[in-house]
Image (cartoon, rainbow, N blue to C red; front, side, top):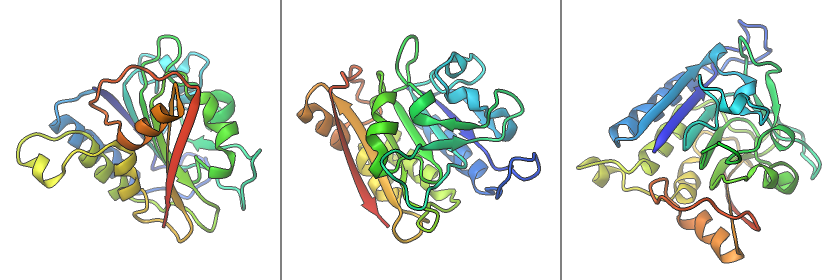
Length: 251
């Protein structure tokens, strides 16, 4: 599998509000290390200002050869999102970067992101940010982005029930999903994406914040099977997005 990461630590120094997120760089580097140990191929590992909003927008930027999110099979984003308090069914979900190019820095996922379409190859999108996958608004914000994408993960919450800055979530997610060799496979048996995120997505979250995993399929049974069982190394065909199935665990 081909994988990429985008981690944004520095927001305040570059005039993008804040707060800064000191754990994100450690997080994405650990993800890269685990996937490298498993024999997967790194496409890009951009950090701070080199992570652009355009990397996640379906206007050509997500296929930018220097680091678009559609280039790999697996992508981890670690940075800011944006929480409503509380969200409604029509509330948007966001990724927020602090790029030196490719502005605007705020990406409206439902309006701007489409993964797996055209020449895009992204199968697994891991979003470790504040409230990028609110349960109440999944239909508006996330169902449309599945254009070949297999499984996505994120958090649902509010400004008072949020995912905190953490290096552990992304590192543990990588260790549990990559399919590690030798003795490491005994320490970290490979899990499905959905199972792994349910186990690690509630690390370092405030009470009431939920880890969410979402998959699609040609039938209800197919969507549920992918949500429960699909691993990054399964080499499954791209799904037909007729049905969506999601699960969550609340911290």
